[in-house]
Length: 442
Length: 100
Image (tube, each protein chain N blue to C red):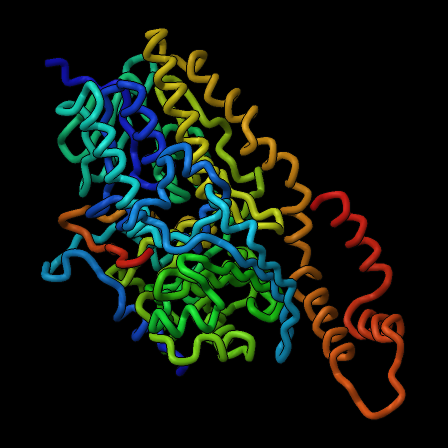
């Protein structure tokens, strides 16, 4: 038996598993290597998997009783915060209840393990039932190259596994991507953030009543302003089946400047009146943290393919916070699928050179992933603007306080209230500049 | 809800190979560098697992046992003091998330 694989995938997260499903269904013989105890064991996300591509990979997944997602997003909220107030834009609609859903909340230890079970089923139904594997608890230490510099396999401990190509889906801490020279050895703090999160458990009935949930419907809430104590970034709250995911994403360069500890900022966030009352009675079940890309393309690897290797998901820093949503897992899925299709085509052509694998880049550029990443770079920079997480939320809350406060005295007109709030927190000049920038970039 | 300390938070983390008396370190820090030339010693506050601490004399100490593999220090240290690897599945430490 030839022990050479058509493809080796490093990493059993969303990108790696999506690639694996595609390879299994395309009839390739592959090995997926995950360093955790199981797929998902090492993975942390906020997290919402946005869009409906999951339905392409696992058709009608919601019909499964024990499908790996927590809840589908039927209710969205964006909250501006100052120290004592919150002002929310709230959108709830029945159209979100139609399948396929356009966003599902996930907890990765459960979701990835479920997706891995789908890969295993696809392997068993395919032509390489005894020759394709998901291998866990193995750490890939090095990519193996031939004399010409082409990647021809991986090394884990003393063992070498050979393959025609390798898909790196190792996540944002992309050591192997750096090792093969696709990304600089050192990547600075400027274009990444640190996420900290708690999973807070509730009695299911309490959770459903508190967040107005119906069946498996769920809510996503993002926070901007006081949530991050002046550090660039934002907060999030997502409803799971019987818990919530509550956390912060903090720009790392800004966090370094602030001198603050991420978990102290999280404690303050939890004391804000908008949060304190909705987490009452909950019990923290897990605290986690992870680095996350911010969507600034300047942090992307120099290239996402080379001779015998492709880089998918957050290892390629494919993530975008456009102000509408933080998208990363859907990009991981899309890029994993395209990388696997490229590997299948390369197998057909019997050519895994960089020239052949370039079609991964080309197809990704044609997909919504790179189109959106390129189109919304302005939004990424706009949201980095200090005013957006300090003065603007303060202004919004100041106005809200004025507008919603009824005093038994002559009431100023809305335009007067707005003028006052602008003068107290910002300036017309700054708002005009922000308005122009925002108008162009969002 | 009462404030949780970092110790209480890390107490909920499911660490691997806890039975092993001597786990292999996956991160190496040249604290000599932290304690001589580094202008900010930022790892002592940006690390979400408090693996980097300052003693009474203001010196940086590092322990890998509480590390939750988030990657923050690898990006945050701009002095070249942090060598970051993934923990070895059998001989290292590191996490298995219950929720993730």
